[in-house]
Length: 543
Image (tube, rainbow, N blue to C red; front, side, top):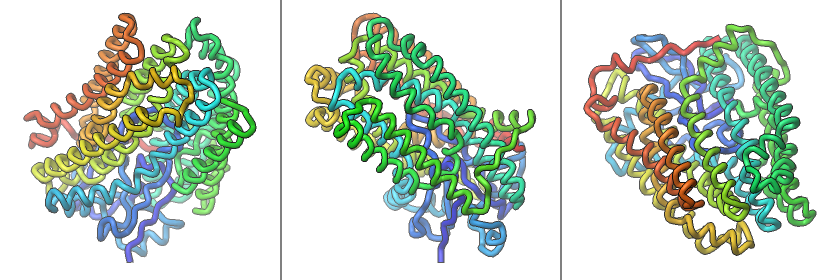
C-alpha cells in the first residue's frame, strides 16, 4: 500500500530523508514568487494522491537539502510522519525514480502524468489570490472609491509581508535537515528560534503600519488621490495585526487554507454587503480567516509531537544561517515585489477610476498566474535527476521541458481567454461603476498577452532553478525589473494611462520568458553542456 505522509510544511521545501546514495539528486530551489498574495497561499503541504505515480511515497518540490559542494553522493530526504520510528519501518523511495520513469514515457503520456502531479498543487496556490479576489468583488459592489483604495492598501500590506517569505524557506530547510538527522530535539529548537524570528518580524510590521501606515499610503497615492488614504489605511490597520503570527506560513495544511478561504468569503458577504462595513469589513474578514488558519496550522504541528508555542532567542550564527538559506531567491523576489508595487503606484497616480479598474484587472491576473506555479514545482521535482543524476540524460531532460512548455502554453491561452471573457462580459461581478468598467475594457489585449505567457515562463524558470543557474536567474530578473521600470515610467510620462502600464507589464513578462528560453536553448545551457563545474551545488548552511 502506497503512503503519502507529510509533515505540514511549506511546499517550497520537501522534508526528505537521506537514502540511496547511489542515486544523486540535486535539491531544487524555490520558484521565484510571481505575484502578491497572502503568504499562507504558498504555505500548505503538497499532498499527492498515491495513484499519481506508482512507487512514490510523497513528492514535494521547491526543496533545499543539505548539499556539500562537489559532494558526489547526494541522497534525498523523505517525508516524515508523526515520529521518527515510523521512518525506519518503511522503505524509502526517492523522487529520482519518478523522474526517470516520467522521462522514459512518450510525450503525450508524459504530459498526462505531469498534469496528475501538478494538479493537487494548484489548490494550494489559489487560496491566497482567491481571498484578494473575493475582497475586490465584494468591496467593488459598494464603492468605487473603496475599490480604488484596495490597490495601495493591498500593495502595502501584502508586499511588506511578502518580503518575509524567506521565513518559510528557512524553516522548511532547517527542519528538513534536522529530520534527516533524526534529532527531534533539534527540530523543536529550529521551530522555536524561527517562531521567535517570525513573531519579531510581525511585531515590527505591526508597529510600522500603526504609526507610519497613513504616511506611507499618502506617499504612495500622491496628492491627487489623498482621498483614498483613509479607506486604504482602515484596511491596512485591520489587516496587518494577523502578521504578528508571522510563522504561520511554514507548516500549513491544505485544509487550513480551504477553511480560511471559506471564512473569508462568508465574512466578506456578511460584513460588507449585509452589515455595510465596506473595506473595513473585508479587512476584518481576511484577518479572522488568517487567524483561524494559523491556529489550525499550529494545532497540526502540535499533533505531531512538537510545541508550536515554544519560543527561543536565536544566536547570531543561527540568524546568519537563516539569512544564508533564503538568500538565493531574495533578488528575484524583491525584483517582482518592486515592479508590481511600481505598477500600482503609476496606476494610482492616474486617478481614482483608473486605479479601481487596475485593482479589478490585477487581482484577476494574479488569480490566473498561480495556475502556472505547479509547473515550476514539477520541473524542480523531476529535472535534477536528469541533469545531475547517476543516469543523467540531457535528451530526456529536454523532452520533459518540452512537455512542460507545451502544457504551459496551452494553460496560458486557456487562462488568458477565460480572464478576458470574464472582464469583457462579466465586469459587473467586481464593480457596478460604468466608468470603471470602461477602463477595464481598455486593457483586455495587454492583459491577455501578459497572462498567456506566464505558465510557460514558470516552466522555464523552474528548469533553470533545478539546474542551479542562480546567477543568471538573479541577473535576468534584475535586468527585467530595471528595463520594465524604465518602460513603465516612460509610458506613464507620455500619458498612455492604464493601457500603457499593462503593456509595460506584458513586456516584463515576455522578457522573462525570452531570456529564460534563450538561456536553455543556448549551447552552454544546463541542458546542452556536459561541463557541470559551473553549476556545482552550493553548500546550504544549516544551524
